[in-house]
Image (cartoon, rainbow, N blue to C red; front, side, top):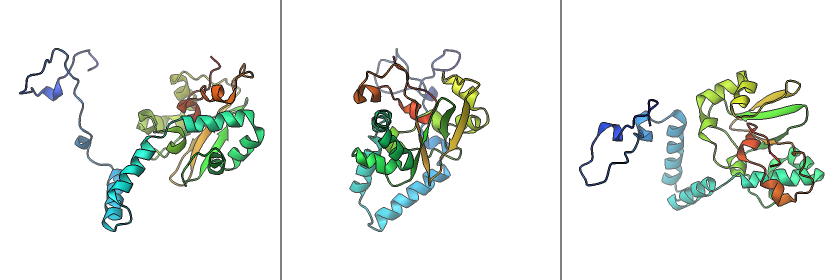
Length: 223
């Protein structure tokens, strides 16, 4: 759908087969149309080399990709909920996310992850200014906006304005800290437990924690 409300059908190309086109499809360019990025080329090259040298098989590669793609924010949400109800676990999580995840039977991978805690004085938000480094094994696949140049460049310069656009208003007396993830260190936000949730059990608390809460562009709501 274009901005003026007019549909574009298949980039202007008509189909030669008999389909009902009363409901037309908006044009969607193929990913290949834009060319490969540096990191896509490097990824393809490393994968081909591993297969060529028989370090892994194509089946092992496929299963690994499927496993990564199947991860969801539920894993990180479980950790947050446990930290809210168990101060000792929270201390261990803030010290070593991967070891804390292992306590819950969660595979957080081998790249170090740092949990940063929101308090009544500090709000944290994460970004990867170079690409899209992100703890996806704990909080699922990164959203498209996290990978967008606009977010990556603006959130470090004007974090309050960006958070406002997500509907998250940070009081003026709170500090906003932006943490830049790298290939060697990822971050996840440990959001503050919302007020009025004292009667909720751990499972109910986990349901309040969204992906964006662990990125820092949102805060948990008590409903």
